[in-house]
Image (cartoon, rainbow, N blue to C red; front, side):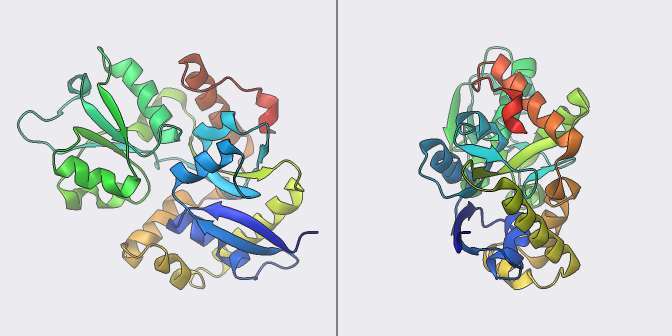
Amino acid sequence: MTTELNIAFSPCPNDTFVFHAWAHGLVPDAPQLSVTYADIDITNTLAADGAGPEVLKISYAALPWVLDRYRLLPCGGALGRGCGPLLLTAGGPGSVQRASDLAGRRIAVPSERSTAYLLFRLWAAQQVSGGIGEIVVMPFDEIMPAVRDGRIDAGLVIHEARFTYPSYGLGLLTDLGSWWESDTGLPIPLGAIIARRDLDAEAVSGWIRSSLQYAWDHPTDSREYVLSHAQELSPEVAKSHIDLYVNDFSMNLGEDGYAAITALLGRAAAEGLVPAIDPALLG
């Protein structure tokens, strides 16, 4: 058994909460973790290039490009209800006021291989005739200032932006998670944990579940670690973030979780947004 395992996940509160115990040697018999903290767009690219560590957090939207080398783990990720991406606008004269106003406009997204982007494209195919103008990829923390300052017409935001966008003077055009849930009846697949296929997936999943259970059993132990990696967030926002994104699906995807992943990737493949996958590879 390896004595050290390389892992990459975001510095967002949900990831640091889930992996705190393992990263700090509190999971019995688990190898030491060497952690790289990186935005989801970076980990998506690392996984697709084959240059990533043994275990990564990526977007479910990036799975079709990596399933030949990585296996989806049934735990540790972000999938749920009421937690989808938001499409924000600044308001004011000439701004985007309704879906039809998006035709020909510049839209900022956090990644073209993100669930947020897939949901946006699937929604826009139904709601926006004439097509979007330009898609601009930005780090997610730069999107709201760009919309506020008028450099972008609308922005697709994820993570803690759900809680902080009013402080930028922005308005909600649509909640894409709510649209997905009403359209499919399924939860929203956001972030996946994947492991190289030469690893013992059952063992890695067990260590992740132990780490998560420790976090739930000792909710204050991870606070300093979580806040040190989310320095712009108040403790209250960080807790809200964890409460929203860390849930029963984080412990076990279950039937609804796998159905949601299959539905998202199937719809996206039908629109030509991702390669088609063999659903058997998700198991």
